[in-house]
Image (cartoon, rainbow, N blue to C red; front, side):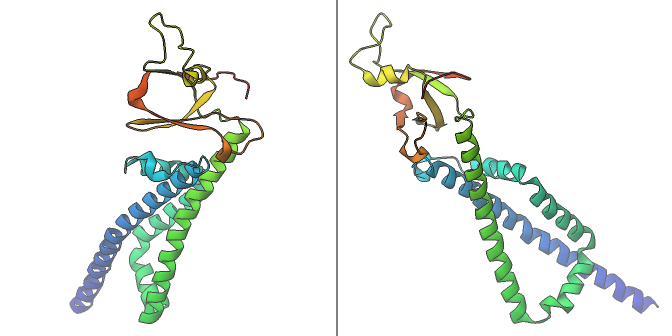
Length: 227
């Protein structure tokens, strides 16, 4: 009897060790997948505006924010993943034993299945990011890009000493019309676009203005402008 108890305790200890190792491997894997999902969202969304993602200089940690947006919009899928993770944590020892005796009994089959799973997760993460980016873009386009604020921008040297617009600065006049929307602002540049009815987003005028050339920028929510 004591021998049987020792064997049982050893099996439980081994199962817990395997579970801990699996979790230690899964956490960085899911971290990478979330990063890939956020990067996919950024690449595909801003590609609609013909903006090269690398030129945006988006901070590394911001990709996880875009991944969070994707998770939020696909909560059913990620709820299922959470349920699977919950079951695995509490019943991982039994599941591990079952897989070892059935699916993972053959080493070649195990390698093939793990590679297939890895490929599926990579493609799935990229696909979800792309799907959410296209979905958000289509929704915003139908809503006249209300998610992006209209802005008025005063350029350095764009006004006279009395505060009036320098008529030689046609760019300044356009920026003061309030018809341009803020696409993105990074540490040293501002990306603006002007919606036009019946025009594809990739054909919209896009201005990239260095922040050092901006004296003042005013965000206007709900501004009505004839496009």
